[in-house]
Length: 368
Ligand SMILES: Nc1ncnc2c1ncn2[C@@H]1O[C@H](COP(=O)(O)OP(=O)(O)O)[C@@H](O)[C@H]1O
Ligand SMILES: [Mg+2]
Image (cartoon, rainbow, N blue to C red; front, side, top):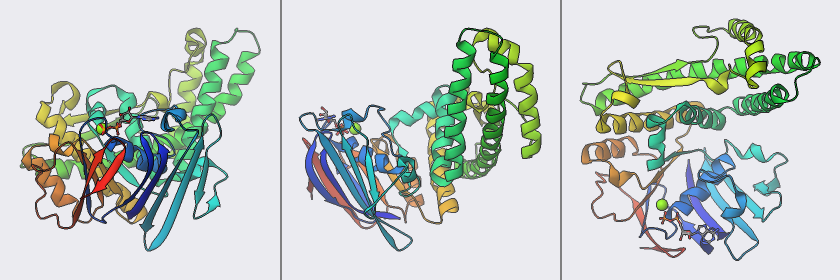
């Protein structure tokens, strides 16, 4: 899959910009605060329907303007797609795919496939479980529309249930809880099963990549620690275990005013040689672990959708040492890459042939 062109109108610090990309490597360089990440953000926005760095859509519109527009033309399996994203301040977004308007904005997810990698993603390794759940959810949402649906339904039900739990307690609460619990278990169990399958796939891939990256010295493993139904691999068993747990914990849930068990509390643990990477990994090991996860993510998406996603490397490539740069370059031979950096002279590009260099300055892109 590859992007042919990006058109930006009043997006962030861009007034009007048209960029034609190389099917291989695209390097955007320039000083800080010039608009490099804004380009990555535009591509991500059309991948997931939301920005990777803000939930406030108005921020995306150029300060002195009222509406923004992004148009990306890309090819996937010999089909050409145009995604047109239009956003007016404080109004509903509008998205068109090949000139046909989407009824549901979330239908945009899964059309354009990308893997994003920025220094911020170190959080996946270093911070709490919600970052790792986000990692899982964004990949599964891109590749399985049903997963995205189940997850958003689950989160809606969860929010409703929590409102009920934290409201004035009276006798009728139990009756309503029954209804929410049923739905919570139903959507939640499907999520648990998908996460299980996903993690066992990624575990195999990441183990192999990390093995090579570490010269055979490291055993990198992922372990899914669901909040309920651990070691259950059948949807019926998962449901049963979840149901049991939620019934048992009802009194505590009511007392604390929140839902204490379910996929929103799942953990994903990462280990190198049986030690948790987050607490015991060296900085080098942590970087390798993240790189392995990101390469696995690309490979997983390729397996699922049948073509390689586009790789967005925001400010991260120059941070890798030569060995890791070389490793990544060898993996992405046939991948379209959008890479941002402040200087590109010292990047190790191996035999990556065919690339385009763009200079970014004050919301303008100059092709070199
Ligand atoms: N809505 C907006 N309107 C105009 N300029 C914006 C808007 N949002 C961000 N900017 C500007 O965009 C620049 C940051 O762009 P960014 O792509 O993050 O920079 P970098 O090149 O460092 O990656 C800053 O100069 C910021 O002031
Ligand atoms: Mg940046």
